[in-house]
Image (cartoon, rainbow, N blue to C red; front, side, top):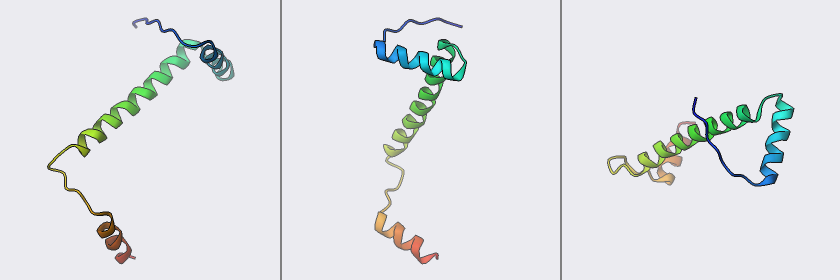
Length: 73
């Protein structure tokens, strides 16, 4: 594993220590899990933005979609 260093505000360190204590885990474990979750969300967002920018993807009219869905009831 690689090691990184980051400067964070004191309040964030206190919150990190509190979370680590509550979870009975190390600071490193909490930071690692937080980064994993953040990067997963980042990847999902990147895919969503890419799909929104796809000119081949049809744009749907909300009123038409809503009408179609209400007719299915």
